[in-house]
Amino acid sequence: MPWAKAVVVTVVVFLVAGVVAGWAWQQFSPLAQYTVDERGGELGEEQMTRIFGPDGTFTAIGFVAAVVLGGALFWWLRNHGPWSVAIVALGACLGSGVSWGVGMLLGHDPLDPRLRAAHVGDLVNAPLELHTWTPLVSWLVGAALACAVIAAASWRAEPVATTSQPAASEPAPPVH
Image (spheres, rainbow, N blue to C red):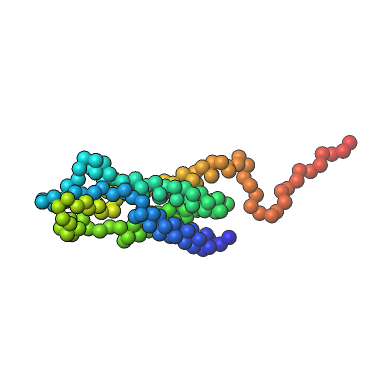
């Protein structure tokens, strides 16, 4: 298989996965809710524990997607040596960035204008956002883990011939 095809397929797979994962992150992330009062908005103690919900959701979705897709793509590309790991890893990074971008486009509404428009006693969802860069790495970790497990499980002590040339045979023992 040509390298160009391998790269294009990997990019397309992770691009589509990033779009779907970004949508899922936006749909299923538990968001903290601010209670509107005279001074603006306030997070209660219980709501403060939910502030990092989007980080956990992004990490879980990205890790699972990268393990499954990274494993499938690495299995498909496994005979191409270490470059297949690099292609899968770069694809996972692309998927992570696309997922974050799609989620932010679909679900990141600035908090201040919504707090100003709300009435006292209303509940206003916190914006969808990541609070650190580490959830973005979950895609890379998942893909790398899948590659490592597949490589370890399919490792052979003897190299496998990649050409169609027959192996040299040993001469027959002399007959006396």
